[in-house]
Length: 168
Image (cartoon, rainbow, N blue to C red; front, top):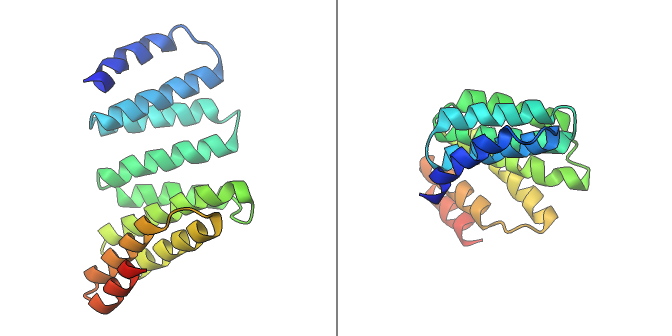
């Protein structure tokens, strides 16, 4: 209930804040609120508005907003559109730069999931393994990536590898 009740507050706040940074943040909050209340189309629209407002400021913020939008697209089964968005983000960031590793890791995770949903298992494993590799380099918890890899092997009926990866 509180999230749903916050939407009118954020919509009202847009009228009172003129700076690009403030408006971008408010659009992002609205996008998250709409996603949390399962209003996915409105969520996507507000991520687009946040991205548009952010274009003139920080590339990293655009990347993170695009990843969030791709997660919503993934949730509603728009996997090809999510993939296009994620490939676009990956083209703009250099995974050799430490600050971009996290963005790339999230991108590969989403690609792994979308290809799993599309039942295209080899690319799914490839992207999940890339996410896992970056998580290990970054010192990030790898549990969810191992679970995703195991789940993909199960979809392939490769239960030996599924069990092996789940136990790592």
